[in-house]
Length: 184
Image (spheres, rainbow, N blue to C red):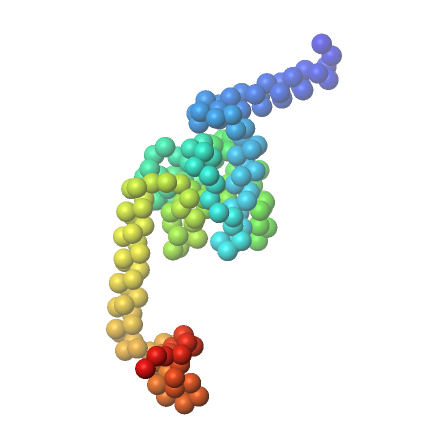
């Protein structure tokens, strides 16, 4: 065996071990590189992100622990580090700037898996009955806080009163608020 082929053989062995680890943990043959490619897709602004992956892919990339996606962020990050190949993944993406969309699979993974949709623009793609209940509670809290804020401002927005019934608009008296003709 030549000296050149020894490092190549070691590299191929390492790649094989990583791939088999992901395959054995997930029951699939997706490689770490393929999983990384999936998560690159979600390291973009929320409006630019594609739809969630099919269930067959989610069965591979989503955590088995249904509480993890709505749990502490550091637990989601740790899960993503592990599925993407371990602690070395952090080094790979630490220099990627936040504005460089599509360049950080770790950030894409956290967005894809996480359920923190209000404060961190997570996508909540992984199925979880527990987290669905949790996010429902978050929506209720958000709605209640918005109602309380509106009650405190007395119908004011940015210090100004607003009127959304269009009753004082003479140009379209036969139109409703959405611009459609009213039937009388």
